[in-house]
Amino acid sequence: MLGNQPIGVFDSGYGGLTVFKSIVKLLPQYDYLYLGDSGRAPYGNRSFNIIHRYTWECVQAMFKMGCPLVILACNTASAKALRTIQQQDLNNQDATKRVLGVIRPTAEVIGNYTTTKEIGILGTKGTIQSESYPLEISKFFPDVKVHQQSCPLWVPLIENGEYDKPGADYFVHQYLDQILAKSSKIDTLLLACTHYPVLHEKIKAYLPNYIRVVSQGDIVAHSLGDYLHRHPEMEKTLTKGAKHQFFTTTDDTSDFDHHATLFFSEPVKSIFLPVK
Ligand code: DGL
Image (cartoon, helix red, strand yellow):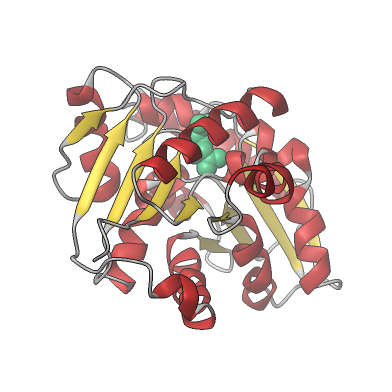
C-alpha cells in the first residue's frame, strides 16, 4: 500500500496559493501538500545562490514528506533555481522525483493571447533580471516581442495589506505606466508573479480595454493536468484522497493563515515546518 504521496506545491510564501487554487479546481482528486517559505520571503530581490539554496531545501523537505512531484508555483524560484535543481540536484539525489516550474508552461501559450505580437511581463526583480521569460517565449513564439518591467513594491504592498487602499494606486499606476511607455503595441500583460493576481482588478481598471491581463493559475493547472496525462508512471504514484496540507516556515502560523486565506479564498490552517 502507498503512504500519502501528495503533489507538492511550493512558493516563497502564500502567493503560490493563487496557483494552488486553480490546480485544486482542475484536479481535485489528488492529495496536495503546500509549503510556503514565508519565514524567509520575499525571494524577489535575493541572489541566485540564496534562492537556489532556499528552494532546494524546501523541495527536499517536501520529498521527505512523501511528494514524488513538486511544482515551483513561484516565478522567482522557477527563474533562479529550477534549472539547477533539474539538471544537477535531482540527479545527485533521487532521479525518480520531478520538479516543475511555472515559466515554461506559461511561455508555451502566452503568444496565443496577443494579436499585435507584443506582450508585457510584470514580475519581481529576480524574475525580470533572469531574462527567463523572453528566452523561453522566443522558443515557442519567435515572432512575439517581449517587454519587461519589475514591480518591486507590489509584493510588499500586498503582504502588508495595503493593496486595496487608495495609496496603492500610485505604485500600481507607476509600473503600468512604465511598461506601457515601452511600446504602444502591447495588447497583453502577464502577471508573472504569484502575488499579483490580488491586484488583477486594480490593474484592469487602470488599463485601456484592449489590453488583456493574464494570470497564470489556470495555465499552470492545465499544464500539470497535461503532464500527468503524458506521464502515467508518475500519475499512478500519486495518492487520491483530496487531502490538503499546508506548511509554512514561519513560526507565526496565524499570520500565514490570515494571508493564505486571502490568496486561497478558503480558510487555511497551516503547520510550522522549520527548514534548513
Ligand atoms: N512568489 C514570488 C513570485 O512568484 C513573489 C514573492 C517573493 O518575492 O517572494 O515571483
